[in-house]
Each structure stands twice: as C-alpha cells, then as structure tokens.
Length: 104
Image 1 (tube, rainbow, N blue to C red):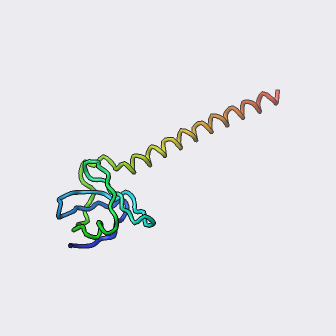
Image 2: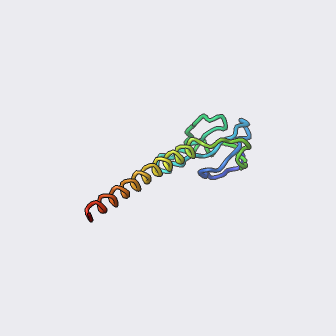
Image 3: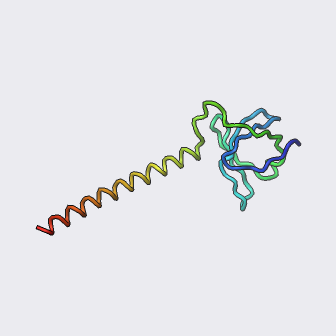
C-alpha cells in the first residue's frame, strides 16, 4: 500500500503499481463508489476499499487529453440549454410582432 489520496472529482492520478493514468469522474458517497475514466477512455467503478488499496500519485492532466466523458456530457447539456434559450428569444420576437399588429 502506498500513498493515500481522497478521490477528488476532476483530479488526475497515476496508479503506480499498474502504471495506469485516470481521472475521477464521480464520487458516490452513498454507494461508496468512485467512478474513474482511464486515459484510453474506458470507464470503471471502484469501491472505496479498492480505492484505498491503490498506490497513487497526483498528476497533471495529460497532454493531448481531449476531455472526459463527463466534460463532454456537460458541454452537450450546455449546448442544449443554449438552443432552448435561442428558441425562447425567437418566441419573444413573435410576441413583439403580435403586439405591434394589435396596435394597428
């Protein structure tokens, strides 16, 4: 057993024993599960006991990393929200046009 670090969402770690690099995506304290994404994109869930057994080193985000699944999902959600907002603006324009027609 090596250094122990608390799992931190967004933090990158290197598993020194297995020479694997991964990022923590989610920590579910109720289920005692840590969801990670390996550098190759594979997702994995570890229980807290499995996490405690890892020999970890804190590392910076690897060069050339294109973003985690969680980051991409968040960006897609933001894009959908922006599209929804654009639709609302168009509706406002229609409301303004309706008001102008009522004035005549």
